[in-house]
Amino acid sequence: MDLETQLKNLLAEVKTITEVAERENRGFTADEEALAKSKLAEIAEVKEKITKAKADNDLLDALRDTIKSDEETRDQGRGSLGERFVKSAEYTQFMKSFPGGQISDRARVNSAPMGVKSLLTGAGDGSVGSALVRPEDSGILEALGRRELTLRSLVSVRTTSSDAIDYVQQISRENNAAPIPEAQSAKPIDGTEVTDALGGLKPEGGFVLKKETANVKTLAEWVPATRRALADVKQLRALIDQELRDDLKEKEEDQILTGDGTGENLTGILQTSGIQKQTYSNGGSDIFLAARKAKRKVRTVGRSVPTGYLLNPEDWEKYDTAKGTDGHFLGGGPFGPAQGAVWGLPVIESEAVPVGTAICADFRKAVLWDREQSQISISDSHADFFVRNLVAILGEERVAFAVTRPSAFVQFDLA
Image (cartoon, rainbow, N blue to C red):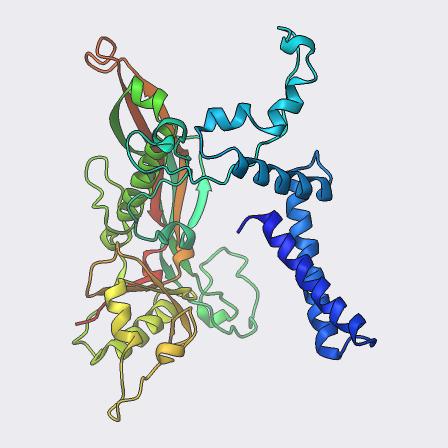
């Protein structure tokens, strides 16, 4: 139902309510008053829509003209769209503004709309739709889904302007601090060695430091594309840009966790020498005990405060759905909090973690240095791309990574 017809019907309904009250020489009943207010609100809404659609016409004039146009259209029969237009009152009134029916080349023309009630269908190759209607570009480009990336948000992230970053690790400590009695005599004047017999001798402590270096590595990927594709499909370049960046971020997360340090690979957490291990069989008789022992090791051996657990989603599901002997969920079950936790620490899921392996750690003790954040560049200089109207779209980033305190990380088994 069009807006003008809807308005006519609403006005008729309000008129009927009013006429009944006037005919019975009384005021509105409560139900009639509520209904009238409801209809008036609908009328106001419809009027606002009509005003927006036909801002250059008064509401009542638009309604009257539409009704008149409908009546004249019915009288004119069912001729072609062109015939009905030139016979319409709108066209006749429009042409009266030009003496002799001649329109000047410089004249500005703007006719009133002509009401048409015939159905114009878009079906069929020869229809109005196939010739005149153009598809609307929704702007939606639904790419394939990707796994959630979480590791960068856990570790410490810094920037660097160098290709190599030095940092220092304390690898051992000798703590000989002790209460010392007061000296019984002064140091011998003759310069002989001070002995414990004289009292007051302070014990010597010590520690060993070691310099380590994290080298910047390059992560890169490129894809080919035609110049025409880039020019004709406005979303293609954005898609390629985003896909390349996401590919780099996925590879970055894999490298942070499992990079083996050979060649141009980063040395990931699980490949770092010195991280602690907690086996399932060595006192971790179930997944909960293994997680608890790992938390204890971060504190007592790593001398750090753990910030969370990192698990593969498949393994976290085992924790989330674990049940007691009576069948009840040990955790919050299906109505538990959105952020999972084990032994008071948040659980972070990552598909980069191998199934059956988990990590408890102070993730702040691992650092990712950004040398160059992900960048996209385009060139036709690759191979024979220039003469073939092809371009290479390259995405790359340069990063360094290191676990600065390996003992603050505990890898534990879940089987």
